[in-house]
Structures are given as structure tokens and as C-alpha cells.
Image 1 (tube, rainbow, N blue to C red):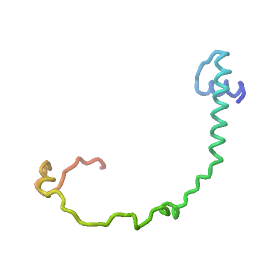
Image 2: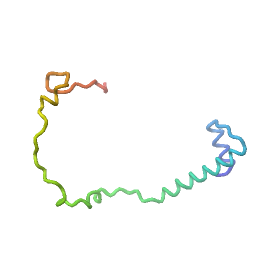
Image 3: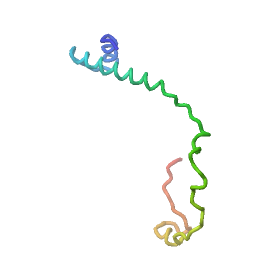
Image 4: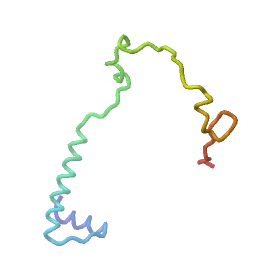
Length: 92
């Protein structure tokens, strides 16, 4: 970016810089723009079929039912007696 463009952007955003600061700002902005241009070169297409190709189903654990906490213990701090938690309404 040249100094004229930096001065124009500063005017639009109502930022005041000294003359020697504009040169540093121009260098930094040029670096940022180059960095963003480099990021554009990455292939970011999403392939949903490739998500789980590395998972081997033989390595997964067996789905075996195990005892859980008693319902009465889990609902001991619930305010309602209808075996449910009451939460504040957030959407009208």
C-alpha cells in the first residue's frame, strides 16, 4: 500500500498519525494484505465424505449399557416436582 492510500484510510476512519508513523503503518498494512492474499491460495473446499475415513470400526469400543445415577439423585436440586428442571424463558 502506498502512503496516499494509507492517508485516505486514516481520513475515512478519523485516525491521526504523524508523517513518520504513516510509513510504518504502510509497511504493516502491506504485510497484512500480502498475508491475506496468501491465505486465499489455500484450498478450503469441504469434503464431507473424507471426515471419517481414518476411523476403523474395529477400534471402537463396544456399546454396553452400564448403570447410571438414580433419577431421584439427579433431580434432587430441581425446583419443580414434575421431575424436570425449570429454566428461565429466553425467547419470547
